[in-house]
Structure formats: C-alpha cells, structure tokens
Image (cartoon, rainbow, N blue to C red; front, side):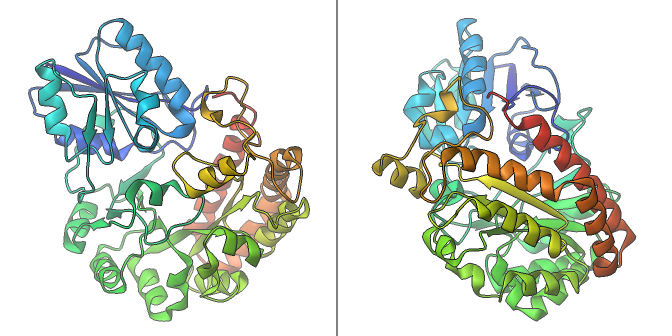
Amino acid sequence: MRHVTFVRPNLGQGRSADAMAPLVFAILRALTPAEIATTLIDERIEPFVAVPTDLVAMTVETFTARRAYEIADDYRARGVPVVMGGHHPSMLPEEALAHADSVVIGDAEGVWAEVLADAGAGRLRRRYQGGTVSPGVFDRAIFAGKRYTPVSLVQVGRGCRFACDFCSIHAFYGTHRAQRPAAEIAAEIAGLPRRRMIFFVDDNLFWRRDRFVELMTALVPLKRRWSCQISIDVVRDEALLDLMAKAGCALVLIGLESLDKANLKQMHKPWNGVAGDYGQVIARLHARRIMVYGTFVFGYDADTPEAFDRAAVFARMHGLAIANFNPLTPMPGTGLYDRLATEGRLLRPRWWLDPAYRYGDAIFTPRGMSAIDLQEGPMRARRRFYGWRSILARAWHGVLAWRDPVNFGLMLLANLVSRREFLRKQGRGL
C-alpha cells in the first residue's frame, strides 16, 4: 500500500462557495502511516481528476450517493478497490456494496488501521463496524492549497441528546456521545490561524451543562470569535448565555424548524418551547451580540401553503442573520422515512438514485398542501428573506442589535454566499 485517495463527491455541478474542509479526512490522514501518500479530491471546489492510487476512500451523504457510485464504479473498473463510509452507506450498506468493495458502518477512525492493513494485503472485508470515539488527532496539511471557506473547523464531540423525527444524526449515533476534554480543544484552537473564525461542527455543542461550562471557561482567555450549532434549551440559562458571549460566541445555528406547535410535537421537538417563544429567544441572544442562524423545515402535517411566507416574515421581523427554508427531506434510516414509507406517501422511495430528481423537488405527499406547494414554497421564502431590501433591512437591524462592525460584515458576506448557493443548487440534478 503506497497511496490512498480520499474523495468527497459533489451533489451537483459547479464550485460551492460555502464548502468547508471535510474534517474527517484530516482525521484519517493523521491515522495513516507516514509512508503511505495521500491525495484529497473534493469535487465541491475542484474538478474531479482520477489519479493513480492503491485505494479510494469516500465519504458519502445521501445527496451525493449517486455521484459517489459513479466515481466508485469508474475506479473499480480500473482495478482500484473502493471503501465507502459516512451516513448513507451506514444506513444502506447493501446498496453501497453494489458499488464498493467495502463499507465502514459508523465512524471510520476506530477501524482505519485495520482497513489499511487489509487493503494492503488484498483481503478487504465487505463490512467494518466502526465505533464512536473521541476525535483528537487531525492533520490539516491535507487541505493545503485548497480554497475552502476561510473558517477553521473544530470538533468537540459527536451525536445529539435529542431524537428528532427527521434527523439522521440520531439514526447514525443513537444516544452515544463522545466528547473531547476542554483543555485539549483550547490547545487546538490556540494553534489555529487567529484571523479565521472558529466553527464547532458538532451537531449540538450543548451536551451537559458542566462540560459546557468547562469548554466556555477554557475559551475565554483565547479571545477568539466562534460559531456553533446548538439546541434552543441553552437560551433559558442566562448564566450560560453570558459565559458564551464572554467566550467569544458570534453566531449560533438553532433549528427553529416550525412556528406551529403541532408540527414541533409531530417531529418530536416540543422542547423547542422551553426557553420561551422564538422572539424572546432571539432577543436574548441579540442582547449579548450573538447573531442567530435559524433553520425552518416544511411539510409536516400542520403546514399549509401559508407557512412559507409566515416563516419568512418572522425571520425578517426578528432580524435573523441567516436562515434556511427547506422542504422536509426523508433520509433513509430516520423515523420520518420509515413512517412515510409505511403510509405510502413517498413519491420517490429512492430519490437519491432517481435521475429525474432535482434539488428541491418534493419527495413525498404532504397533508396540508400539494407536492408542488412543498416544492415551490421554500424557494419563495428564500427569495423573500434574501432579497436585497431584506438583506439591507436586516443588516440595519443588526447594527442596532449586535453593535459590532465585524458581525455586520460577517452577516453581509454570509447572506451573499447563501443567496448565491440556493440559486445555484435549486433545480439541479444530483
């Protein structure tokens, strides 16, 4: 074994302006013996050009599965073995094995040394059962020369303590959580470029209050600006919010999901109300100069065609810095997918392999609207929220709410990138 090629497929054609470095490959590079050369091909930011190699390792999401299978078939036709990992192969290993020599189910780092040894000896097993470990080693040199979004990614742990109906994270990790020590995280951040914002890639940075306090306390002396994904229940704790602000938090991504309580109950997320109404939540964060990136999902049973405009108006009125308005997408392995399949409501049971599918298409029949409504509504909300008048109005709201020129600049840049990306992706084939 002399050379391994890591591949990150794209979900469509064209360069992504918001592509972030795939941290998993920095982990696997760090666990690869120094005598084995590695190459990273990331189709989101560069054209795919196959290089001579002894093994191909791919991370596969549901949206990129079709493209991943094309690339894998090409390599295997030339005699190069392919191993796939990630959420999609873990949920549908038999499907992936029709295109790959081997599949890693779960996190790969715990079995990567075994995969390399078996590949080198020509005895790759069909399946490897990975585990959830604390990711503490990274070799970011593998990203050298690649034009990713200028944000430094850091991972504290994996998994989420909640089990939302639509979310693939719980399907992948269950209730297990691995988390690195706060001192280790602080030491890593201290060595990252100071001019870059830190983004914690954890699906939910708030796991346990005591561990969260340890992390925030360790971040304070670093004086770094950072963002994260976090559950809304953190906002009910005023002391934690104060500590987050002191530690340098500039933006939080919160899954608001819906303005309808019946929808929140159906998606197993009624706890979204524990911190008060959404307006109060946003106001508490803004009072600490923390921007809010809110996400909304449409298609649950209580949604009607009016839900899209209602969400867009809410997001503008409350000055969300960024917002996502997405049609509900049933991912394999989730409770949502199984329920819709049982009810016979899936329009495209294997939508990720369907050549007729286009990004943004409705995948199932909703109750309170037509499939066409579900397809067109999110785009209408995006256009309303990311219109130039809305961007300028929210920017002015931000000047008053955040009182921070850097936040103002970050918000404008993020809006321009988001506007470009949703226009680029909508209607594209996978």
